Amino acid sequence: MKTIRYATMITLIALVTLSARAEEPIQILTTGQFHENEFKAEAGDGWWGIFPEGGGFTLQPAPVTVTIEYDGIMDAEDEKTGRRVSIPQKSTPVFLIKGLPNPTDGPLASADLPTNLGFLYPGQQLNLSLVKDKRVDYRSLIAIGNVREHTVWGAIYFHDYHFLLVAGQQPSYITQELGHIKPFVLDGIPKVVWAGDLDRNGESDLLLDVTWHYNLSHYELYLSSAAKEGELVGKVAELVRTGC
Image (cartoon, rainbow, N blue to C red; front, side):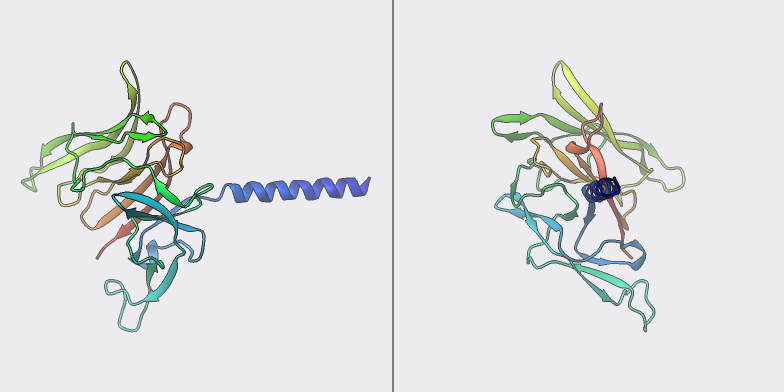
């Protein structure tokens, strides 16, 4: 009887361990220097990079090296608190990711975003449709917001700004609001960084920069495979990075 109980206990422990590993949180990262207080990622294997290649994008293993160095903004002369993220590849990735379930090396289906894509003014729409195995995933992103004139700044500013993700065709549309952003002026603008099928399920995933300030990058990664009931995508990771 004891042997059976011990075996059952060991099995349960193994299942808990496997479950914990399966639920490893997804992390995103960029190359370059970080301030000490904004860096939590671990160096080593397990990281993958999304790289521009041949007019499209590819997913490749990209082990991360972290070097401690002088931070010209935060450090005194005798300090070194900066964290520099580097990878073996010479090309610069759009972003790095760790914890993606079953990542596969190779080309990624991606949305055909304009090369000069900038700020989407309220009412502007961006096509995110993908074609995979002759099946089209019809999706678009619409900027929503209001414009006002600031009585002190003497300039226009945007408030209640967010994105509306739309999927499907008439007469059946599904919509989801993403990335509600603080009021901002045009010196720091939110934008779409990348859109494509990162989790390889045939539907668009999104990396947004929901910044509201020129000295701040606030990345949010949304995966279609993480969508809950009634959603198109689910937010799985974010990264905040400041400049000076």
